[in-house]
Length: 197
Image 1 (cartoon, one colour):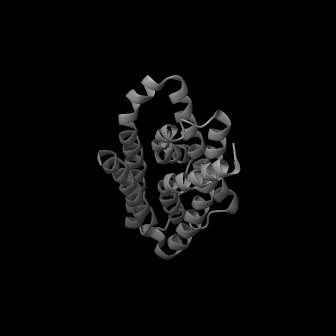
Image 2 (spheres, rainbow, N blue to C red; image 1 turned 120 degrees about the vertical axis):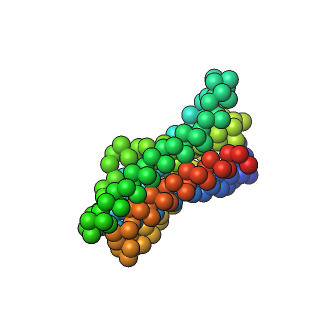
Image 3 (cartoon, rainbow, N blue to C red; image 1 turned 60 degrees about the vertical axis):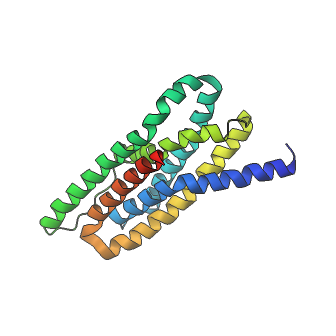
């Protein structure tokens, strides 16, 4: 590859990364609001999980296109619905927990579980499977580099989202779970609506 081709690949991958990371960024804000005293280590783990899924999903999409395209095409219409129901479930659970703690006049910091984090990671990155079509003409090495860039961009944006969420969470305290849950449900609806446009 020439220098100009590499430049185009890198720029396109950064732009893809920003576009794909918006859902993960929004969920990171919600997670930060839910746990305003989150440790640096936990912040890195959460951002790393989202980045890992955003790296993995386009790579899986690329592999499907180069191996089992007919199966991937059959699965593609269900992707927005899966993301919607996963985020609806997590968001609904957060809202219920927020209402319970608010009614009890307690300010509880709900820690995000490993299972909850994995579900969020899948839900916010599953639509990135379709990016496999965008990078279909790339070689294996080029697609790996592109997916690594997407993952790095996601990681950085999620760190920003978590920091922003923690600041907001310290201000709104007990209502953080309810607002965070509404954000997740809103993201799920946006993914679903976008699939019909």
